[in-house]
Length: 435
Image 1 (cartoon, rainbow, N blue to C red):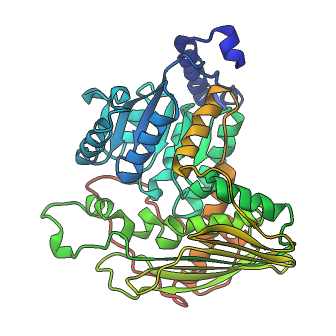
Image 2: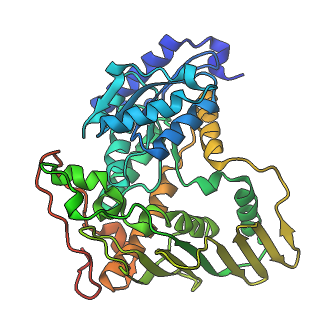
Image 3: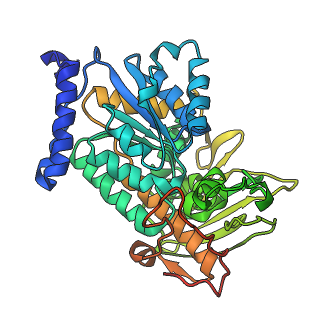
């Protein structure tokens, strides 16, 4: 039983303290650090979804299954059609449909939809918009005193990721949850595997090789498919994966999972430098992302990691991790994680859906008054992916200090639905300059 349960915390008290936290955020740093009270097990937790695509819909479904007191009361997206589709999918699941309680007045459309969801009386927000929007949504959610589930990565450029990183630190000071969508950190077999690695099962790590060799994702349609009168911003958001300011590209948006596992193995110590190769093999029409990047990371002690990423139609696909240590090997393939060394090991414990575990642990942490905060490691892993992309795009060696101080900003400083937004040319190594 939590302290709030002992004191008979009510829904009204919970919302009152949430309002105090928001007022504190507006009043200044000292007041903003005031911790939120936590709802008791009997209380309802109101959830808002921002970004109503497939991943957002999945996150909402998992949030509703995580805790019987969770209700979905608000949704926001730049497109009404996305809200309608997501709502229909959630209401089609009989076990959660009664707690999908989104009224028309709580459906918010537009580039400012995230602000409206945050102001709608929710306690927790699920952030699943395209990654370029993530930093400003995290910052606003922390300022509003909301608990957060944020899909990976944390952003698409160093300037905005640093802003989100600072917000994550503020969330910790305000006792707010921030659970990251780096889902492998919540998968039981991987947790057991990396604990073994950290306990020295293969000795000191000398090299890691990670692969994310996948097929194309969301190909860019030809310009002739663009409806007459559709703005640059709408066209790019509808095809968000193909634009680096929105997706970050395949290394940052998808293979960031593998970069995150590399850092997990290295106990979240960031690499000191990296070089990379990359480019575009298949035509991308007017998009500007690479479809393959190989990154070579180095740590201060000389240990190395390679990250091979591609999204190309070809005969071979692979998503694996190989860890070479001074006393053995750690291997993760489709068959699961194993260790080959002085003592061989393979996982024999329970198997659970890692996406569901994320939400189970998020809401349990809120209930017991000890919110999880993954924000700093989420930012660190995102920054390591950005570091690799910068090395590939420029052809230069990029250090951790450089990426942490970089002024390379991709997300527009002012974004309006009908504005002109020319597509930046695709990067050319040796020509594109690091900023």
